[in-house]
Length: 265
Ligand SMILES: NC(=O)C1=CN([C@@H]2O[C@H](COP(=O)(O)OP(=O)(O)OC[C@H]3O[C@@H](n4cnc5c(N)ncnc54)[C@H](O)[C@@H]3O)[C@@H](O)[C@H]2O)C=CC1
Ligand SMILES: O=C(O)[C@@H]1CCC=N1
Image (cartoon, rainbow, N blue to C red; front, side, top):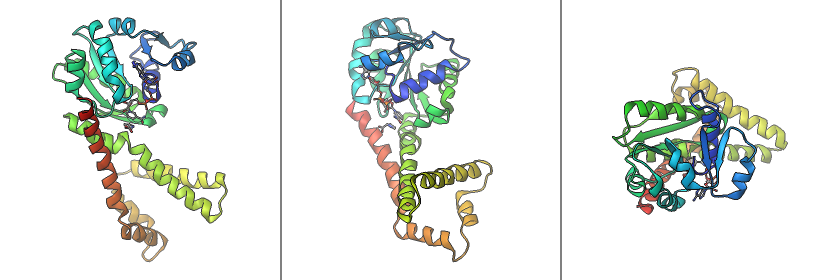
């Protein structure tokens, strides 16, 4: 695992606690001394402060640095790679073409995870170059599944699209929660009560949604009595075009993922 920040460490932890990796089989490299020091007593990982030593012996190389840092990492690791190795990028935007040309590797996977992976509730979309065999796909999928659920998508456009829906999506949910929290505080609830009201409203609504095949529209109808309070709220959101604005936000993230790919060409 190259880069043990939010995502890299989350996946490293998920993978070592899965049945697919024995303790001590995951090599972790991060450029930051603080990150390496913080993990130095962690017996689950083999820590490296030298990229060359780690990548030489790895079978599968995960990379989770920020997109603008990857070019330097690829350049440094390229001389030490061999063509049997598989590279799995968790980075937004960076294309398979760029990854394969910058590393010389042919077997490459692009995965788009999200932050709930930290609590094993993540969702990851992935796709790969044609050189990655079916068996290798299953192997990678098993590792990605260690942080939640995984979907396979047919091409990279869907990786950029999933960035706009699920990769960035937790932030949209937090944004909506923040607005509701601010409304609760303004109404005079305490900090604690506001958090309890908001967090449990999201949690409960999602559990209901997951427990049946009923559409979201029908769920809205079940909450909203004719001429009642919910209808007043939904009408206010419709008048303010909130539905359209949320869709535009998801597309903005999708388009930014495409742009990030171009910036790394
Ligand atoms: N945070 C999120 O919710 C999501 C992030 N991602 C992707 O994951 C990647 C990492 O993001 P975060 O974990 O949030 O960032 P982060 O900043 O928490 O972690 C990046 C890590 O890379 C290390 N690093 C920087 N340069 C390095 C180098 N040359 N060699 C080795 N390590 C190096 C840093 O020290 C840091 O620990 C990004 O490419 C992002 O697009 C994807 C989906 C969701
Ligand atoms: O904001 C970003 O660029 C990364 C990718 C998806 C979530 N965080």
